[in-house]
Image (tube, rainbow over all chains, first blue to last red; front, side, top):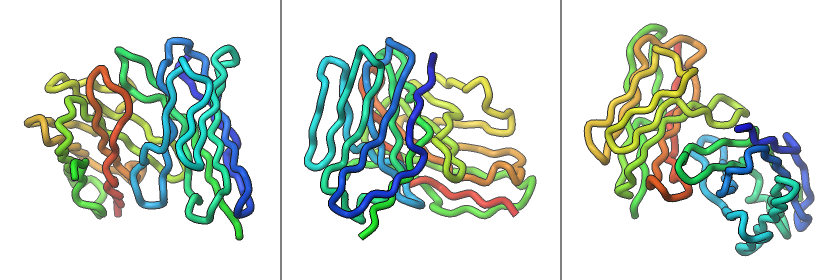
Length: 112
Length: 112
């Protein structure tokens, strides 16, 4: 019930393309869904997050799409750049239990 | 800038020799977390503190202990490091009742 499943495990996208990473959850009590970006040797950094009362949130080139009925959410990176190459983790948490449940991570590589 | 600072960035310790990792924060967050992250894996929660209340994850080995002497500082003690404890150790903070973590840059622990 606490799992968050993330796919794909790795992704290669050409520069300028759209990168899409998907996550699915089981626990309907989750009410906060962040995405973290992690570069090698660094801690994860919050990229963008969404609450289930909206279906989409956009910040610059990064968009979260959220489907409450399907219990799925995804990260879209538009106009992907080599500097976006990193590992991305989706996560979920619920009010009253602030511990984050992480997905397994996606290693994104943007090629020229 | 308000932040989460981990020291040292890199730590080499001998097999079985106790080691302490430190974390400090200037965000005035009341929750602090310690995560272990092994290569290509998601962060795994070891402990967290709500203020001074210590919460141990069920599967955290007894070899790992933690101290939070005040709001700003938190320590991770590994009593007898084994080769399997080599990992990145991440400290994170958040507000109780709030959403989103701020991670430090991590301490890379090598056991020789």
